[in-house]
Amino acid sequence: MDKKYIKNLNNKEVEVIVNKGTEKPYTGLYNDFFNIGIYVCKACSQGLYFSSCKFDSGCGWPSFEDEIAGSVKRVSDYSLGRVRTEILCSNCNGHLGHVFKGEKYTQKNTRHCVNSISIKFIPLKKKDIKQIEHISEKYRVPKKDFFLFFNQID
Ligand SMILES: [Zn+2]
View 1 (cartoon, protein in one colour):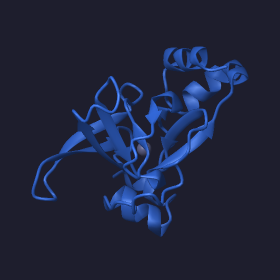
View 2 (cartoon, rainbow, N blue to C red; view 1 turned 180 degrees about the horizontal axis):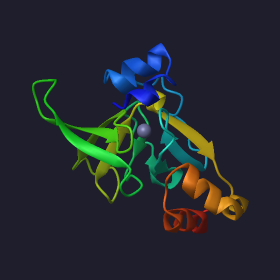
View 3 (tube, rainbow, N blue to C red; view 1 turned 45 degrees about the vertical axis):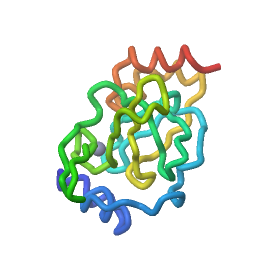
View 4 (cartoon, protein in one colour; view 1 turned 90 degrees about the vertical axis):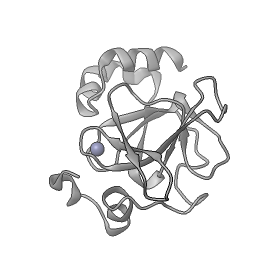
């Protein structure tokens, strides 16, 4: 992971985001949390997931059916003696969790299983569309993705 971002993290965050640990299930801040907004990388603030892609899988960690295009990198992880797909922030390479396919939770049939400690929730309301230039730049998310999101919310 890019060193310039590590200094922003506390020890618990380093354990997961840098050393690829996993927080205990049902303990994370965003496991049972469904407010409207965007989830950004804890380390570098890149936008990763909109709340519209979050769903309740019951698995004990925040679950998302899709990422903001280009924001998440996938790599093979053989650490448990089987292959899983690790997901990382595409900007800073911070560890997010793993992605699983074929579980049939949602139509997209994909579950990003993300550690709450790897992400930070930013609430958004329809009126925030006025700040689209600012938030697009701040969270490195294309304006067209924000427009789609704002069109979905009240
Ligand atoms: Zn990042």
